Image 1 (cartoon, rainbow, N blue to C red):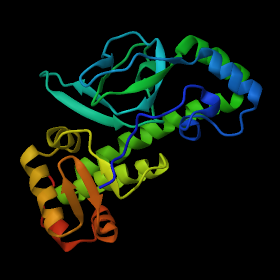
Image 2: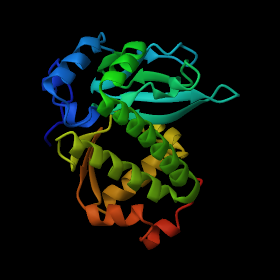
Image 3: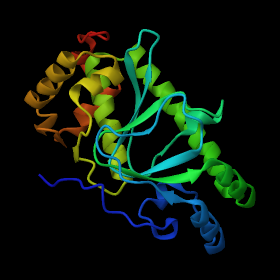
Length: 250
């Protein structure tokens, strides 16, 4: 199985492989130069390192360059609740814009790196580049859309539908990165997937095994190969009779 390597990207915004994903299209060379002046590259994060923690003051927004980042919050009783997994080209830190402090924590799931956009400098650049300001609004809208989809997935879909939706979403995001949509690595654990989707680790493992037995997917440790996309996408839409028999709160 061909492995996905997310660690080989260039430095400058103007020639970065991820520019199409995290920046607005149509910026002039001068506008790209203005943006390059404020972008910083953070030190590499190792698995378990935090990019920021809940309560930290908002200093920057971040674009994931390589690896993957997990966002989570703590409930009132101290339990961790995962609210998102972020891949290269995706922006994190927008949660801090409302109160100028982060409401969640960001931790690396594997060796990762990111570009840093100092917030005060970024707002100044946005005044000079209207297209960049529009992009910021679009990214905030996308975050709201992600949250709405997660709520729908957890509250309305069965356990099988949640797993199928999760895998299909990852597949689409890897395709947008220019990688294979049918073969990719899960950097998150079964327990983390269950936490995100409101399922137990036993349920996640059982459904993965069921999908493999039905030849929807093939699993090689953390690597997933999608074998039967129509069946998987049918589950996402609740079109499978099997999914109706699967408990939505397993």
